[in-house]
Image (cartoon, rainbow, N blue to C red; front, top):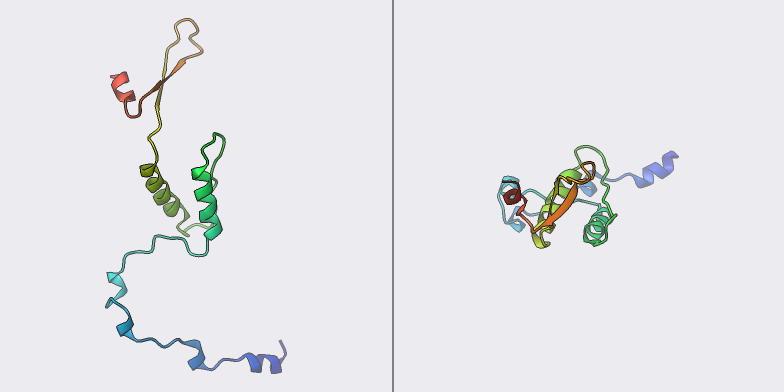
Length: 120
């Protein structure tokens, strides 16, 4: 960048700060705040996750990728737990021996949460 352009773009130190009053905050230290649980700057990723989870058809999957330590796994886990509480519990499935065709076990669909009773 030519020196004249750089000189015109140079900022004074006071222009690099934003003045604020501590009274405008309802807390004394940041230790009093709840941890941020969202995802900054990832609106499209959040929308894609919401779409993928809401899709009621088989064969739709959600693939999450990103840099380590960005909170993507924690966010997805929290989101899925919250959505799971809102959704109807899925059926339990168990496989039982097929005495006629031992290599082809039979799948039985049971009401949610009852498979452990069947196995007992």
